Image (cartoon, rainbow, N blue to C red):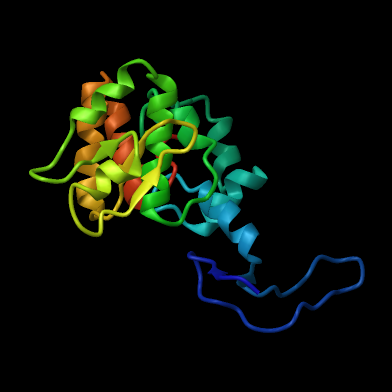
Length: 205
């Protein structure tokens, strides 16, 4: 079995499922065991780190929260504001598969940037550290610039990236890349959030 998801609005209720004739279950456990792929699917639909499993499942299953029907017919409608505004990378991040490691997310974002700005992307070769080469067309160029550089290919592109750096450094380099390529501030914040947390920062309200 996979991870355990507990209801966040009440303590767990233990006991087996009891059925009455012609009735719904009288008692249900509040702890649900999910298989790994189902758990990852649910987590991918989180809007931010405060999202509870119950809230995610309500959206996926289109279950209205208690009292929502009364509010719907009260004559007052307030459009829900998205947690993050849409930006140039919204669609790509929204459709991204689950990637648990920041190196995977870093390379994924770089691939998206290259696909969106193929002509300008070669300019990132000028982004370097004091001695290290952050980007190159071959792994050898990066390896020659320092020790334990761990160059990885940016999938679908002719470029390689140095990956043996902390997440904060990846965020700084990614921001430099996106600034050089002319991306909006919203896109930079969305990419930073996705790189750090592995969450999808832009979801429709």
